[in-house]
Every structure is written in structure tokens, then in C-alpha cells.
Image (cartoon, rainbow, N blue to C red; front, top):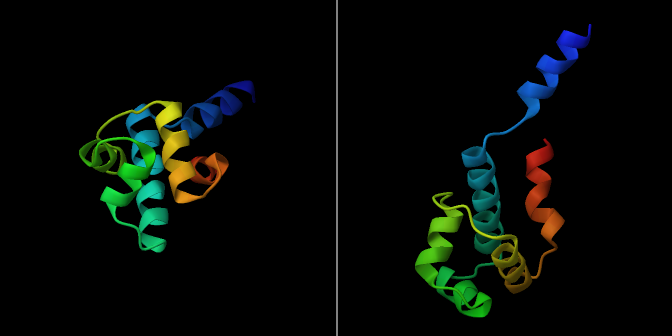
Length: 87
């Protein structure tokens, strides 16, 4: 029984690249739903728009502080971004 539980827990863990893509996709989804350009959000977040693009595409693993600045620019709470990870 304990082995089955360990297998279930292991299967629930996401790899780093999966987490980065899920978070990036969520940021892009919110930005597009608010009809904001990548340039506007990047400017408001004080980051380069090319970096924001890489974050949204899941190509880079950014810092929590960068995520904080982006979510602030999007007027959303940080937990809203990470909620997708628990589905």
C-alpha cells in the first residue's frame, strides 16, 4: 500500500520545464484576455518585452520577483498564476 502511495505522489510531481510552461501560458492567457500588448505589460513590469515573451513561451525559468512584477502589471494575484499547477 505504501508503495502505491509513493508512486501516486511521484506521478503528481511536475518537471521544471512543465511548471515553467504552465505558468507562462497562464500569464499569456491573462494578458490576452485583458487585451494588453506584450510591450505594455513588459513596460509596466520594467522588463524587456523579449524577456516577457520568453517567460510566456516557457523558454526561461524566471524569478518569483519577476512573476510578482508581471502579475502586478496584469492586476492579478500571484496565486491565480499558480492555480493551474494543482489541477
